[in-house]
Image 1 (cartoon, helix red, strand yellow):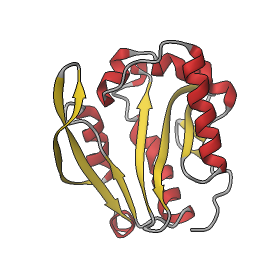
Image 2 (cartoon, rainbow, N blue to C red; image 1 turned 60 degrees about the vertical axis):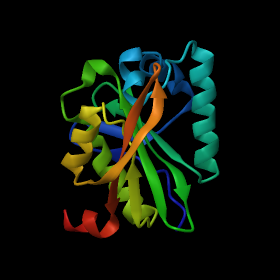
Image 3 (cartoon, rainbow, N blue to C red; image 1 turned 30 degrees about the horizontal axis):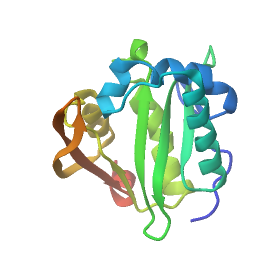
Length: 184
């Protein structure tokens, strides 16, 4: 895989740009919202310092080419409303995992699918990946809908894989191959 450039994308309504250290406050609004974090089985961030540390890890991973995290912003406002990432990069096998989260006030508008289209193009074109995976919880129907809208294929499920609030939840397995993306 050749090295990626800055990789900023503009869509009809959004700018999807590499995460910056000064995005921590806006991202804390998302990462501290239990309505959001419950969907992927994690506890909300308890303080801004926790989000700042997460952002710093994202920046370090970008520089080390082990993950790429973008801030999702509304074009006219440049307001950060979410983030998406390619992480768990496996350079030898040319695959990565897709992750994303969006401020709850912006749910149901098709913004995440819009943001992920150029990220997927970057994954297969810029990074030369062969496969992108996504592992949403089965209870996260909105995430499943986004993946299906993009053309991901559900391969199966890890039964009762994630322990969340004293209950085990299935984690689904979705994938997109570069050949699938070219056909869509």
